[in-house]
Image (cartoon, rainbow over all chains, first blue to last red; front, top):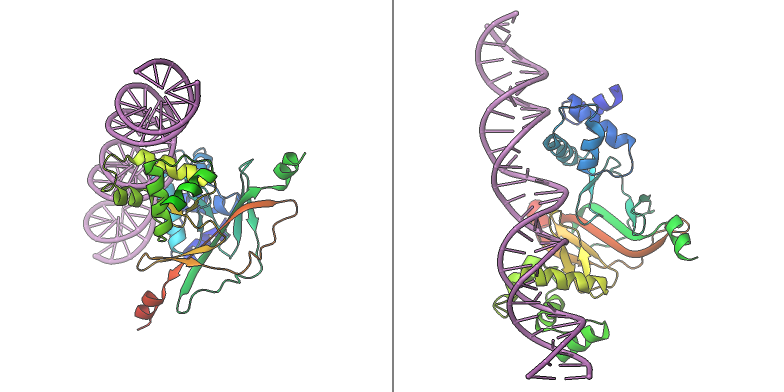
Length: 135
Length: 135
DNA sequence: ACTTAATTTGTAATCATTACAAAAATGAAT
DNA sequence: ATTCATTTTTGTAATGATTACAAATTAAGT
């Protein structure tokens, strides 16, 4: 996967096997996996993988702006390789995650404040669960 | 504090001393305290207070819609008695918290989705830290 | 007062995340 | 290639917020 390779190098991250696989996984799985999800998924491919490496790597990605932490779940951090401005929806009923695209962050900050990043998290019922509920 | 008393009763929560004090504290301190903040603050007034009670009570408040969890911090939940739609700003530099009032949740959800609550968290630099930074 | 239900408390468990140090891998330079 | 320094990975132990649970206390209703 030369693409991911170069993407990492361009951002000052040496592309080790572990980092590449984690980066690739994040880019191919848009369901906002947890560190543990990633660990379990990659263990067959990298049997020596350590959970610490997953955490270290994810933290590095976030530091370098290659990934974003999604704090929609109370008890665990989730990760998203899509760093463009978008929100997240979690279904209270089935637990599914959905990306929410909002047109413009139409939010006025107080004078002098400077935003570095926005996190919009919405909880509710997805289409399927909502229909199930209203029946 | 008869006001808080009735507020709790109206929402089906029996107003014990502990619950009253925690509710009162949440309403008087708008700085989004953690469970531990509340515990430490009330310990002088209620020397027998247990941290479990603080957690139980806060969870009950949230269940009944009397408070809201603010997940802007990675590692600890914060609580807010202001349940009306508003966002939160955390200063990366000084760690201060600020409420953000946005006019309308101008977010289009996918068809069929139903939102129960919105959480808008913004991180950046507050006025003071921003000026300090640009000097 | 008595009985039952609700609440509070303390301790121990859970679980995600991090600290830390040793082991392994990589890179550069001779 | 061999050595040396640096980076990365790994495993284990620690941390810290939150919850489970059962005993103790308090309140409510009769």
